[in-house]
Amino acid sequence: MLDVVKIRHFYFHPPPDDPEHESTPEELWAAAERQAVEECLRRAGDPEAEGLGEHGSLIGGPEKPARCFGSIPRNVFRATLSP
Image 1 (spheres, rainbow, N blue to C red):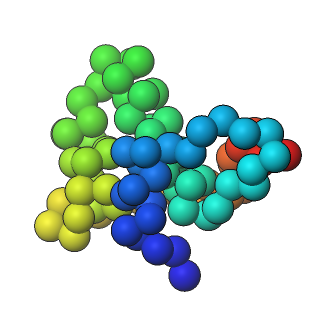
Image 2: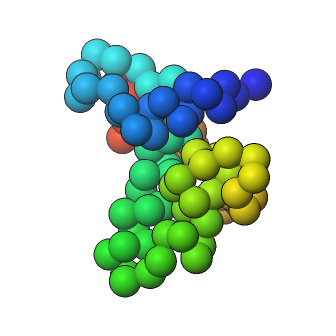
């Protein structure tokens, strides 16, 4: 079970780059959400309108719009975020 409090923490405070550190599932979900916000901004999108980052339920809390991922972040990020 994912710890949403930890995901929110890692969203705002990512761990330092350390090639020896194996990312936790919560770190991976936070990284995926940060990437979604960055990609949205790069294409001139609106993270608030799309419910991303603090505008969605994963980071912003249950009163925000639900956040839906197209894939499980550990499958996408594991190779790049951990040794």
